[in-house]
Length: 76
Image (cartoon, rainbow, N blue to C red; front, side, top):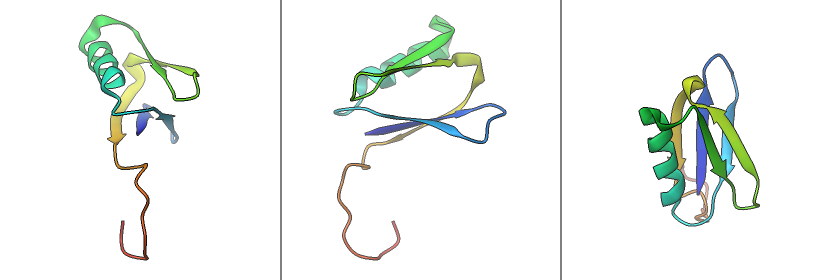
C-alpha cells in the first residue's frame, strides 16, 4: 500500500510504501492531524522513518490497490 502526503508550498509529495493494510499508519495520521502531536512519523516497509510537520500537511492519499498487478492497456 502506498501513502502519498501533499505538503503546503511544495510541488512534490511524500510517498511512503507500507506493508499490509496500513491500519497503524492511518491511525497515526488521524491522531497527528487531530492535534495529538506536531510531527507525523511514518514507517515504510524497508524500516525507514519519515517525519512530516503536521501543520504543513495539505492532503493525505492512500492507495490500497497499488500492489495489484494490472494487465492490458485500458484506462487505470
